[in-house]
Length: 264
Length: 83
Image (cartoon, rainbow over all chains, first blue to last red; front, side, top):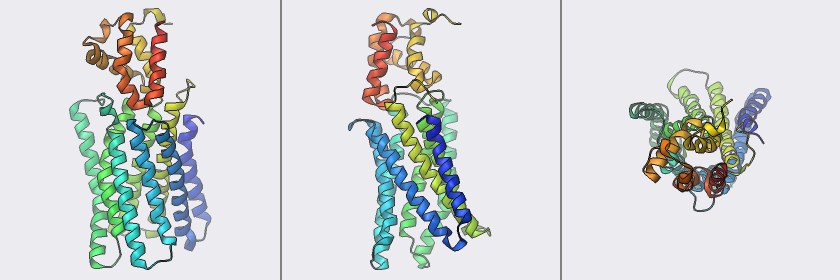
């Protein structure tokens, strides 16, 4: 499969999901989107695990991609917990444990991938001031998008209006992982023109889709907007973000294992 | 057309790395690791320095493309110079 085909897959997948969601009955949309998210997570496990297995056991990026794969396994387990016949409190605690562990894996995975350039002994492009500005901007955006969601989930959990332990774990993961988009994006910028641009650009795009997800998910809590539409947009961004992570893994594997000279 | 023989040693090493790292970072990598591994500027590299340069580039390549691909790239660099 060419790099272009790998890069096209998340977009096609998300467009197909959006088309299906548009034609199903409104009362079935939430279930349809949840199925799409879970299918995307299975695909993400495959993509990121294939990237990890392209490296040998003691290699740096094996750890990063492997933790990414474990993260998606744990997030799938979180969703599967809903299918287990158990008291609601047990299910909620189980889901909170899975989502917290999943987000710990996500943060460490993204941290590992974000540091790859530095570990390789290379410097990011641009002046120190420009790099600082990019990192600072990423931190501000992450706080602006994940902060309100965290506040609302903590408030709702304390007041008991909504059991939100799993959401709090997810919000904390977002707050810690999203600022790391800056070094990942700088890596993508550094390798433009080479085969490694594909995994790093797809990974950066995945983070951008996560930011869109956070935006669409948070806005209905803060402003009067059409809640159902924003839920749909949030979950479609969710599907896109996960599918892009899978594609990044597949592109990483191709860059490491493929002998053909094409960079496209 | 550019005569390949007119390219410097540094440019020829960078050309081999560019497939993975892109042309800009490939040039930067050659400069960085010539200085770090051989304590010399990239413009001073000669064919005799190529084996040492591949060793200097090895940790960077292993991190970004893995051991197996790093060895292939290093062999490609050596072959480029008939070594």
